[in-house]
Amino acid sequence: MDLKTSSTDTPRTAGSKLVEKAFKHWEARRRAAAAEANIAPTIPHAFSIALSREAGTPATAVAQEVGRLLGWQVYDRQLLEEIAQDMGLHTNLLESVDERRQSWLTEALESLMSVSFASQSGFVHHLVKTVLALGTHGECVLVGRGAAFILPPATTLRVSLVGSVPERVAAWGQMLGISEQKAADQVRTLDRQRADFVLSHFLKNPTDPCNFDLVLNAPRLSVVQLAELIAEALRRLVARQQEKSRGKPPA
Image (tube, rainbow, N blue to C red; front, side):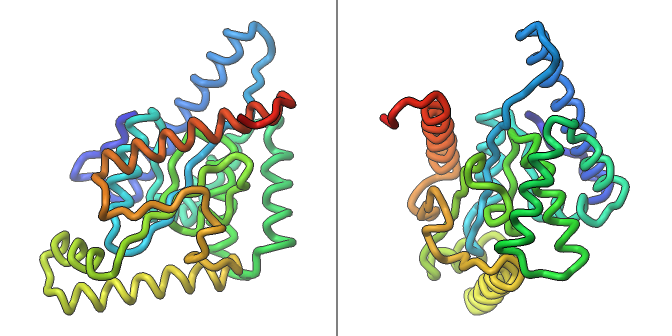
């Protein structure tokens, strides 16, 4: 799905256009499912992909390639924050969740708040609701902002992109055209800030591989190869979940 916006779009305009595209996609999917089944529209909970990353790994490029392979929407850190902050977009997103899925959304939110969610920040609460609402619709790739620690594991492929510090520093410096020392300082700062965000708001260790389904050493592979591995892992995870729901023993 083509999610590119023009160079003249402001972040707010880009977010509005993306959410509008998503609404149309969800409605088309709902109608197609209803027509195929010839019954009242019902859609099983779709999967999402939550992509976590260390600084200097090509998370956005990989997410866009995964979105292209699957035909899914991609929400990066900036767009997630914009939807959470813009009350109009945020309200429209929550209202787009139909009645059959409202209970799932409510249960997921209550479970997160009662067990593993410690933040009292108003913005983080909006962010959590935004991520959960997108996950309710499914068929999307969410980059950063703790999505891997917010969305239920049962319907989420949680991926972490990692890499050695020297390789990540080199990639960061090349991308921004800055010195190695400056790149090293920025990578170290970003890693710390992202870890602090997850730990303080979600009480999770973002470096613990047990919090993910797939951990990829990003510098070892190309963007296309990383995306293909993620898409294949999703296919296998969905198949396994379907077998479990039908009562079959896992292959």
